[in-house]
Image (cartoon, rainbow, N blue to C red; front, top):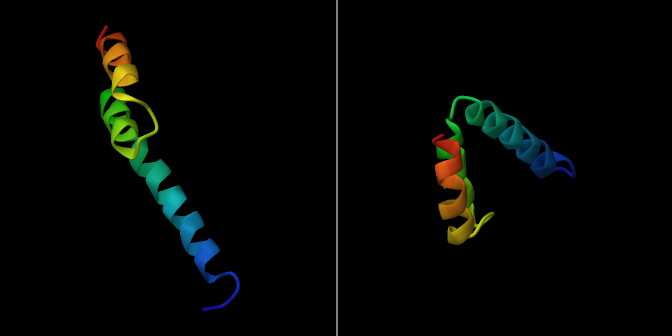
Length: 53
């Protein structure tokens, strides 16, 4: 591997993930954030009804 190999691949993955996120609903994104550990379950429960209004 070259010095720039892994960083280029990671940048491509980030771009692909951002493109995929545009097709997901806000509720789907909230579930993903919960699964990634970016938010707590309490934050999920508090936010979910706000998205359904």
